Length: 70
Image (cartoon, rainbow, N blue to C red):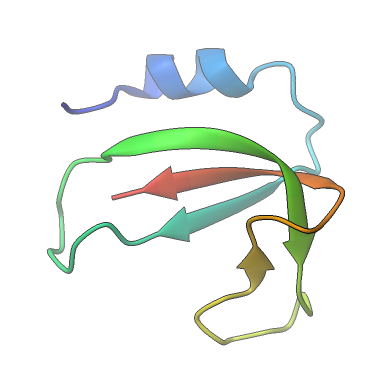
């Protein structure tokens, strides 16, 4: 189901403005609808300059991140 910007903004409106925003690929298609988004409370960011595929570990940490899956 396609997500709207309104849905997204409503879900994240109470998060601090410096909350990290991440993406995770569900499939390899480009220009696909956002599949889901979630707030992960226990994420562990890697190096902020990391250009690798996994800049944030979605567990084992103490930072909140927003993950968009497409």
